[in-house]
Amino acid sequence: MNAAVVELAGVGKRYGATAVVRNVDLCCGKGEVVGLVGHNGAGKSTLFKMMLGIVAADEGELRLFGEPVRGRGFRDVRRAIGYLPESIALYDNLSGLETLQFFARLKFADPAGCAALLDRVGLGHAMRRAVREYSKGMRQRLGFAQALLGAPRLLLLDEPTNGLDPQAIHAFYDVLDELKRGGTTVILSSHLLAEIQSRVDWLAIMASGRLVARGAVTSLTATADLPALAWLLPRDDAQARVFEALSAAGFVPLREDDGSLRFAVAPARRIALLRTLAWLADALIDYTLTEPTLEDVFLRHQRAGALPEQRA
Ligand SMILES: Nc1ncnc2c1ncn2[C@@H]1O[C@H](COP(=O)(O)OP(=O)(O)OP(=O)(O)O)[C@@H](O)[C@H]1O
Image (cartoon, rainbow, N blue to C red):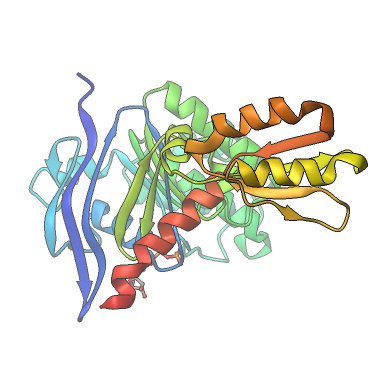
């Protein structure tokens, strides 16, 4: 069996009277790429910091590679973890190469590999320039290179594509693919669902400190029980017939100015729609059925997850 790289059970954190992470269970295996998504303040960064032992959990158990976080054996495990914080502190007067060599010494990694690492993140051309001259995206790439020092077996990346242009985002995910093939486990947080959904093995959705859903994108969308959106364009002479047939079948169509009709189709009513459309085929010019997106799933979980917080 694939031993778990990350095992969190019942993890919680409070700041004063506020519970910012609540009862989180999370398990990630070797070579998995996991997306952690959630609204601002959902608790993603706090969860990363607890996994690294930077912030102490108030409740629950955290183990990485089988070692309890903040336990005696964690120091060695910590060297196998690369971390990109949400905002990394850099010394503006050092060059990119000097910066990475500095981090390499802190991490007991070989500074000789720094130039190659900067090439890998697309900073080879700028490695001798002072960091003060770096753009936001270049700083982010330097932060990523820092996280890759020492060939980590687990990468925790807090909003790693923040500030990157589309080409750099593409290059970033290419590096992740390579790392995954080499067996590295990656957990990355993001607000960009459209970007992340095709690049991760599965997603964990946080809302108000709780993990409210997890799974592959397809299964999250399938189990969310959200309606699809149907759009029909009836022939001019068949508008009334189409409207009445849909209403008789239990749908609630809304007529647009151009004569087209829109209505929601619950998952359990999809076959009923198919039958109605087959019967109406000669009366229609066009139709589309738009599936719920990951964005819809996310918003649904955010709303559901926010309810207990609002009641508290
Ligand atoms: N040191 C701290 N003291 C008090 N409250 C804190 C501290 N650090 C974080 N918080 C609070 O904990 C909650 C979770 O913050 P966290 O940074 O983990 O969220 P996040 O999901 O990473 O948000 P974002 O997407 O905006 O980065 C927030 O309400 C935040 O204000």
